Structure formats: C-alpha cells, structure tokens
Image (cartoon, rainbow, N blue to C red; front, top):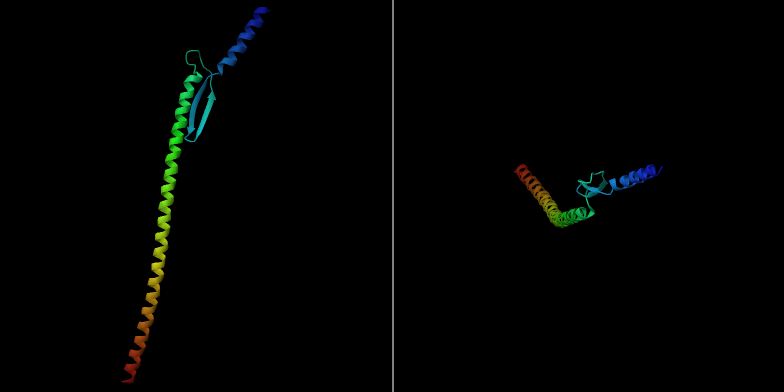
Length: 121
C-alpha cells in the first residue's frame, strides 16, 4: 500500500511538471500566445530561456508600432495636402465654368447683334 501511494504521488508530481514549460507561438503579428506543452526532460524550456524571447518579441512589436504610427502621421499629412489640392481644383473648375458662361453670353449677344445688323441691311 505504501508503494501504491508513492507511485501515485510520483504520477501527480510528473503531471504537474509536464506543463511547466511554455512554448511561444506568434499567430498574428499583434497577438502573442503562450501555450503549455508537454515535454521530456531533454527538451524542457526554462522560463529564463523564454523571457529573452518575450522581450525580443515585445521590442519587435514596439518597433513595428512606432513605424506604423510614423506612417499614419505621413499619410495624414499627405491626405491633408490632397484635400487642399482637391479644393483648389474644384474652385478653379467653378471659375472656369463662370468664365465659360460669361463668354457664351457675350458670344450670344454679339451673334444677336450681328443677326440684327444683317437683317437691317
């Protein structure tokens, strides 16, 4: 009976130790998952080995985040310039349409005068 309890305790300790190691999986660039894995004594990951990997991944994510933030600032500036350019072009178009209407009106009035002068002679 003593041997059975010793064996049961051994099995309990072994089960607890099987899940002590963690493997880092990066599924998406923004998500970090730590999955508990079974291991043999030879392939056990120690927390001291995992922490530098986590730090490196976090540094990479922070760097990527800074890069994306700079890109956002540049795109906002570019968008602002394009909006200004668009407004300028729309104003120029309205001015041209007005000039075209004025020219059309002037030509119509000259044509009417010419027709009146032609009919009078």
